Amino acid sequence: MFDWKWEFAWEILPRLVSATGNTLLAAGAGYAIALVLGLALAIAQRSPYRGLTFVVREFVEFIRSTPLLLQIFFIFYVGPQFGIRLSPWMSGMIAIGLHYSCYLSEVYRGGIESVPKGQWEAAIALNMTTVQKYRRVIIPQAIPSALSGMGNYLVGIFKDTPMLSVIGVAELIHTANAIGSEHYRFLEPFTMVGIIFLAISLPAAGLIRLAEGRVRRKLGLK
Image (cartoon, rainbow, N blue to C red):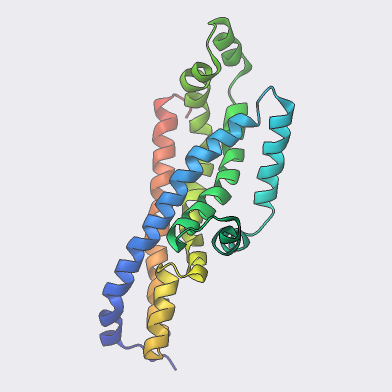
């Protein structure tokens, strides 16, 4: 029987709102790490040094082939055995950032490889350094092609933040479970968490599509 209690729902709403802020912070920090590290991994895979290229590609495949949950556990619980002691927050953000950087590296790589060969040749003809070539010519043209994938992974990171609850990070699922255990009522907290995720994910996906369309129109690609 559906036994929804509005008074209880309003009572727990402030705690869930606070947890939403924690969830957004974790997702934003993890995504920022993934954006920067992912680009570095993508460029490293195009290195003329075969040894570096091999190591980076194998690293990317290893991370992509293992569960995020395992990586969270490894950083938080195994790290101290090697002298690396991190807080649950730091462990979670590093794990998310590292995991998604490998996926974003493939998105970046696809965008970089979509840049016409003539643009590469022009950069070489102008005697640009590797940094100048990527910063001034390649990356500005690669980003529009990569925007869709980058946006999708942003939403994906947000939906994966509940995994941080396993190491005690007070995000939405962790807070909802704590509320349910305290009051022996799980209907309201978990239903509200689902609504909050939808309320953030759906508009975010729409805004990403709008941003992608605007960027492509500005560059004359659409």
